[in-house]
Amino acid sequence: MSEVKKSLNFIEQIIEEDLKSNYNQHELKFRFPPEPNGYLHIGHAKSICLNFGLGEKYSAPVNLRFDDTNPIKEEQEFVDAIKEDILWLGFKWEKECYASDYFQQLYDWAVEMIKNGDAYVDSQNSELIAEQKGTPTKPGVISPFSKRSVSENLELFEKMKNGEAAEGAHVLRARIDMASTNMLMRDPVMYRSLHKKHHRTGNDWMIYPMYDWAHGQSDFVEQVSHSLCTLEFVMHRELYNWFLEKIDTKDQLVPKQREFARLNLSYTIMSKRKLAGLVSNSVVSSWDDPRMPTISGLRRRGYTPASIRKFAETIGVAKRDNVIDVSLLEFCIREDLNKTAPRVMGVLDPVKLVITNYDDDKEEWLETENNPEDESAGTRKIPFSKNIYIEREDFKEEANRKFFRLTLGKEVRLKSAYIIKGEKVIKDENGEILEIHCTYDPKSKSGSGTEESLKKVKGTLHWVSIAHAIEAEIRLYDRLFSIESPDADKEKDFMEFINPDSLKVITGFVEPGLKYAGVSEKFQFQRIGYFCVDKESTEEHLVFNRTVNLRDSWVK
Image (cartoon, rainbow, N blue to C red; front, side):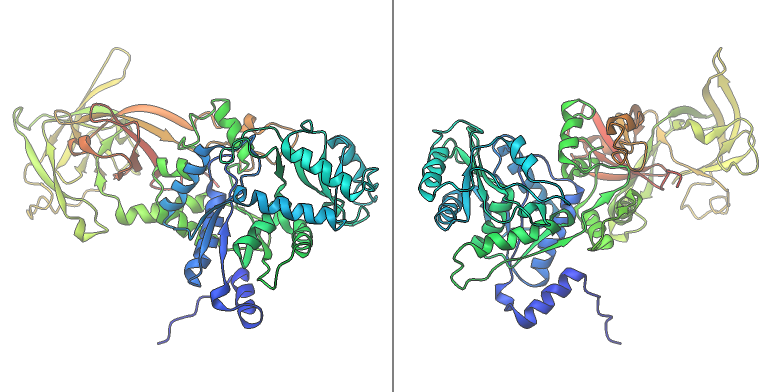
């Protein structure tokens, strides 16, 4: 039976059509062009998977190009973090490029545009320029400086470049059409003066190109065939093409810009500016705080490259903006960790359980599976003794028929151990349970094959031996925002919707084999959820981050 052919997304359809008419296979080239002014988030991961995925599909090179044209916000720290994130996702770039690599070429092309009458130096401030742009229904007003002579424009532009003009005194604008229905075509700014040190070029340049000027030209220099942007750049395409028409392409390949829907995720914000605000206002601890939608935050929380790539594949490439439920992302990590994460036992809200008919000095090491989803994962030994911890919520003195956990007079199984029966409780003066006393059936040991071990009971509890338990700090992370669209209401600050329960720190107890667990190791705490070892964890002080619950606990 022949394999079902996977349908193409609309970007792939465009490429397939181009291969029939405009391009040869060897001419295909893609790029991922982040600005190094913050850490990448899950929305960028979608773009990374799209561009590098196309590179893999068509055996085409993909460049990593940093759009480093704003020295005010950009730092080497962000460059390094971006590279780490892409490599962690499992992708490799053909060339590491920077818009700053092309500053001289961009400047030379701008000089040619001035000579050809396609650009001029405007000495108005930004407020006046914005005011003269008009509105979508009202044409703009031509700048009083648009008639400057070529020689005067060249002289002023040179002074701007050398830092001889005051910061903000002049800008270079393209001369296009102040009456265009596309407001981006109304003599857009190409260069502004910034007397700021650049993280790569230092003080060599006192002018910096605007995104619309640098982007398409950089694509051309690198011979990118398809420049894929998110939908907010649809109106920029006309300007993208106009700028490319103003340079001598020498019969070389001219890039094609196409747009796709950006990722909008429920209970999440994607604005780097707002994410930076969360960090600067100490709402979160850092860019890689596990509540952040940054790739580094997701990595620290316990997400895997496979889960994020699966998520990107599942949501696909759309032509229209929509909101993806964050539950889908959580489903992808559950599905991945279910296959790969070792099962362990940890008790997060412990209450002491005493097995009264178990010898005081007796100790057993019981065999249990590491992962029932993976036979090759093997087994391990866990210690069992008279005194153990169970979850407080797993016991009720009195319970109805639908409560299948431990109660007085009823039996449950301890995972990989014995069947026990609740006998009595010991309480303090406030009525809080201090100890639960029970008895066990010594013939009911799991896997022993006895008639008693095969007895069916309705509940199975996880536990840890108190004598062997390792204390651990457990960080219970949840969604950072309490409403689905935290930045949709323009009347309110998104900070008003911070979920006060997005992080709870508790002390729990885990089985002794976890003492030497390494940073980023992932586990399923049986019956609770998936957890990973935080980077702050040590052998003396274990720290686990909750990645996700076993099931979606949020009510739809």
